[in-house]
Image (cartoon, rainbow, N blue to C red; front, side, top):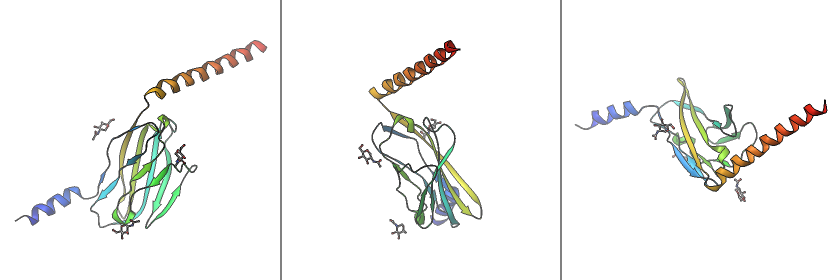
Length: 157
Ligand SMILES: *[C@@H]1O[C@H](CO)[C@@H](O)[C@H](O)[C@H]1NC(C)=O
Ligand SMILES: *[C@@H]1O[C@H](CO)[C@@H](O)[C@H](O)[C@H]1NC(C)=O
Ligand SMILES: *[C@@H]1O[C@H](CO)[C@@H](O)[C@H](O)[C@H]1NC(C)=O
């Protein structure tokens, strides 16, 4: 019969966090998908971390405590909006007004009682078209300016 087969599939899928790679255009919005499949444990928290061009150090920036208590950490980047539902083990997050600095890896962590953390990484690629070259040029100009002022300071001595 089919029932044992379904049970086996559910067993394999148990506590798997579903994520995915995402690509988005500069200025658009994107949903960072994150869903925990089939657990009977108690969800105590969903937390989001990022490591991006703009935030190269691992940054915990958002948490959800069930049923729906949401909190920004380390500054309110309110371009992020919870798009999931903790009762359904859906931790998906929407990011709007995406910039090139948002490119990087996002991690979604489900904390379950009693077994602990289940994490998935969602790599985000941002396509910038013209802006890509422009930002790089601006960065180079800034660097040159810094170098110029350094040499100026040195000359003063
Ligand atoms: C996502 O991207 C990473 C590296 O960027 C790659 O290793 C992985 O295979 C990709 N996964 C999917 C599902 O495309
Ligand atoms: C996104 O950008 C638009 C236009 O600049 C602005 O009106 C809007 O408030 C921004 N949204 C967020 C969530 O920052
Ligand atoms: C979240 O999911 C629960 C259970 O399916 C449902 O009752 C509730 O209305 C959902 N909440 C939102 C905000 O959609």
